[in-house]
Every structure is written in C-alpha cells, then in structure tokens.
Length: 126
Image (cartoon, rainbow, N blue to C red):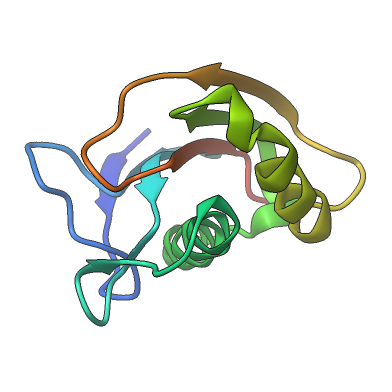
C-alpha cells in the first residue's frame, strides 16, 4: 500500500518538516490546520469564530486534495488556547459539521501568538 503526501495551495503551507496530509490506502490524516488565510498568509481577522471558519476552509481544501470531504472525517481533534472560547468555537463547529458527527477531542494548549484554534482530522474516503 503506497503512502504519499497531500498538498494544496488552497491551504497554508507547512512551516516545518511535515505534510498538510498523508494518505495511505483508505486513510487520510490531515495535519493540524490553523486560521491562516493561504491567500494572504495572515491570521483571519476577528476572534475564535472567524479563525474557526478559516480552519474549516483549510481543512476542506486539504481533504479535497486528498480525495475526501468533511463527511469522510471519523475523528477530529480541536486545540483551543482558552476554555473561554469553547462556546463560540462550538457554535461554528455545529454550523459546519453535520450528523453523523465524527468523534472529537477538544484540549486547551498554547498555540503560536495570535492563533486561537487548531484542528486536525482523520478521514476514511469512500
């Protein structure tokens, strides 16, 4: 079974030695996406809601490049910088993600300055 990196210009380029996603057989692992607009290289203006929308735009782009969509995602991990942003993040999440919902873990971490949310995804296209 071949393993290959997935790349798209429609999502931010990696800033270190990792791929936007890796596909092996029917499994597609998308690296954590943040709220950076790939067209400008800047963090989406606004708060956690705007960054979360940009994160999902980036996730969709990488998933599509790997032959998948949000409906193929079986697991998401969300990283927030503060519990205070959970309700606003979750409201956007609930607008974007549809049933049957993927499994999800949400944790609070330190992210680079200005970034409020990061999400990675595991998908099984098909």
